[in-house]
Image (tube, rainbow, N blue to C red):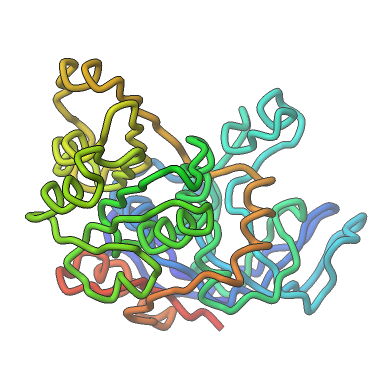
Length: 329
């Protein structure tokens, strides 16, 4: 099979080449990868994260069609389109038994600590897949871009009484955070310079310069009850200004840096909670798949597997205007 692979860190070492097709053991499934999402974690896997095994195939978000199933696999069959939960878990540790597969003691991230989806085929445990007939670009967005904000919003109990402020609303997770918060009944204020963000269902879209004044006016000074900051350091102070009394700041990313100065006076004076979240569990993934038919994707570019290096570089393009995908087959 053909795969996008590297032996040493760095985009210049990323090449497409033929590698042996993986074999299927009991309890596993082999998928033909159709479409894969491109996320910052994929770029980090190539450039900075410790990965295994080497040579390594990145790709932490994708979907595929079942080609082969191992013994004892009964819930999917060859030919099924499947959504893929891209964190490996053993199902037996204390975290897994609590339904918190994200923090499995033996857990691994597909595309980081195990081979990823930027390849024509992959073999994974059958418990990581569920049948789905969702559109391609939604299926290829479920494991990270959709699940991450879904878990974050559920973790703080977002509902009809909330005003959710989404920083980075045109990014991979921001696109879905808007829509999912609306599904939960919240009022959503999106911060972005992209006018199309309104099409994702935001009640109001404002740019960064005018965000504080706009939100103060719209909420009559109450500000946001939930502020979602997936961008990190650069927008930390803005997030603190945008959150209201008894509000919550959610963080699950640090694209602009992870080190912030914490003004405790502003935290305790407004009774603010800071919540860190990470992906989501298998139960949430199943729930998300059931409602994802109502989600929309803004796609900027689709690359072929041979253009995988360009796809990852496109994450840094200042003109990026939506999601990036790699069409594998």
